[in-house]
Length: 360
Image (tube, rainbow, N blue to C red; front, side, top):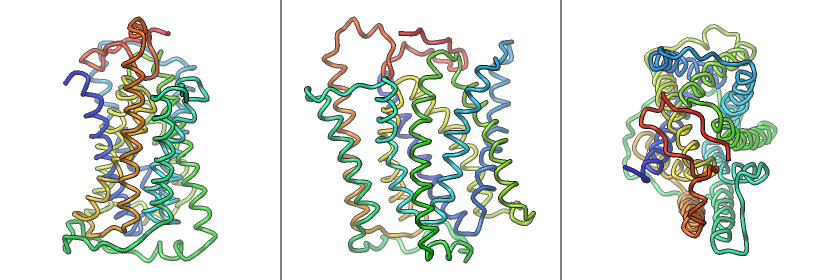
């Protein structure tokens, strides 16, 4: 696939994440505890990831240094543990639409951290820089539209949805309380900040760490342990920890394997290849896939505001990507030999055999 591979993998990642949003929504609506859900999904991912890592790395005897361990511990705490738990509670306290809107703040927060850490530059005197800045502003406009403008309700084309579950009254009081709504909005802001910083920290760490597979495996294992501590502290009722053959188990398995394992690994690869802002700017596609999935799987229609907001987010995506491609087109040919946040040396076909990227 050549140069198109990062684009394809980034889009695939967003489709998997859209499935996570749909199944998580169904699980929470059935009354599943959000903290327990996060622990189970991270544990499922660790159980799948670790054997794969040991199988691919069985011939290598490299040990993890204490310095790298502490770095991975903090990165997993910021991005996975804090981000996932805050987002889950926030959606439970507010609404799925507001949660989706906040999730798409990632391009803004990631771009901000990338600029602050000097991993990305914006030159407003050039067309490329203006396009990137304009894309961020359009993204903000799309998020605001999704969050605050509903408009007419557009009924779903399909009246019978594929995912059927019993809704629980456990979450109803949250939506009627102004206090919990404010807390939920604050937690959405925390999750957006943590994920934006997470993208940038991963790109920075992967400049010197040899294997993305090991990196994401250790992250998942540490996040499972961290999430267990939080879950056991917040939910001590044994009945809330039980899983049956229902939507809860399906959501845990899907999120644990296709999201925690596959999507995070693909995301890690795309960040190493193209940089954190590139990965974050594909998040608007998540909203498009979620809207389509809501129609087919949950039988939910959309409001006109959601449709307009989604269109604005797609425009912002292509605006920033066009600006970045324009910068690469006019760049000095000698700069192609340098490593930066968007252009990395050619990666080997076997990701398990990666070697460290040279410092700029």
